[in-house]
Image 1: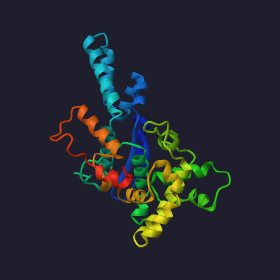
Image 2: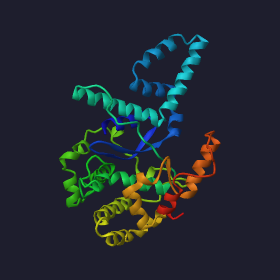
Image 3: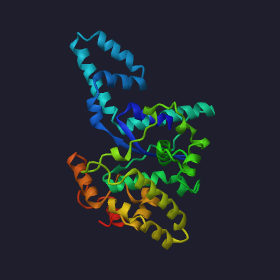
Image 4: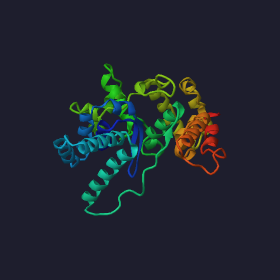
Length: 317
């Protein structure tokens, strides 16, 4: 958590949701390219060299030789390259996974591969996919049977959001008091925590897809996940009761244009329904067309778009 939050403060990449499990982790990220474009050249250099200090010597050499046209051109190329890399998910994940692998190998006094393979990523194309995927990530410990409550879901973004909310409440409930004294969450509770390395992207500040913001408030999200966690516990043995429980949250689901049954399917098996991208049918078609326009070659361009069947199953479109 410390590492990916540190990287988020350096890259133009915001953390929307996360869950750190015993042998894997999930991240929902927002790439903020507009932010990177607003950085000055000095900011780009400072950010990149904080990750790769050796590059600082190259910059010093180029500045010393800035009277040379070749040095100025190379400096400009480097700055453009680094600005792009600071919005690149592959570079973000490389800086995260390599750091963790080296640290783990150092602790275990061993060498060799640490991660099973390269990270997997999916593009979230609309509000339905984004909120469903965030909920899927936040509910990981509950689905795995590690806990049965959101506030005891350690190392998840939902627990962090609940803690930050509890800190602001004047008249706290018993659950909020207990959460703010939870030992396993002390890394989120201390007063001297750097804001830049602890802040999640607020639901209200997440950009919508064609809208100003997401069509769900933080409080509605809390309540929706609370109900969903109870429904997940019932889903294996009493599916009808689980569905009935979710139907009580129709108002929150209606704002997302997702049905109760579809929501339960999405938050329990989101990773099984999609491949490169997730969203409603029209979002997937547009994504496929954009890939064709970008120059990606398909043997049969219009024959098959991965995920359309899942889009119809989950979102009824």
